[in-house]
Amino acid sequence: YFLQRVFKIPLSEADGVFGGVAVLTGLLGTLSGGLLLDVAATRSSAHPETCSLRLAAALVGLAYPLCIAAFRVESYSWFIGLMFAGQYLAFAAIPTINGVLLWCVPASSRALSMALSVVGIHLLGDVPSPVVV
Image 1: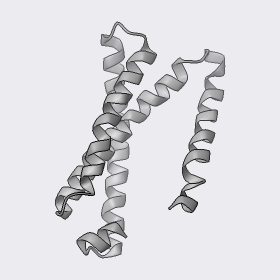
Image 2: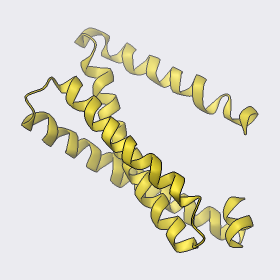
Image 3: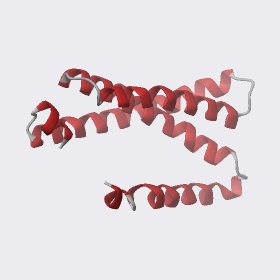
């Protein structure tokens, strides 16, 4: 309801635009984050886990202020632009985080590592969010 309340955008349009931004940034960010991680890991002398954590911190560190700034602007276009950039960078961090989850455990435990990660995301994210929001 934020876009409807602040920018007077009809709810159906706001849903479509924001959903489109989320889908597009999810696809592009995840793909480019994986490519960026491949390049960074091959060019760095650090362990892949260290490289991934540094890259994740940088991407999230850039994404967070952009998303916060989006809620401070008075222009709908600026809101969408800042949110696009912030979400793109946030989604680009996902492959780096997955890389850490896979590289920090023995090969035989990688499936369990990812499974526990997904359970943790749900327990800390989408399960309590309806109550919190």
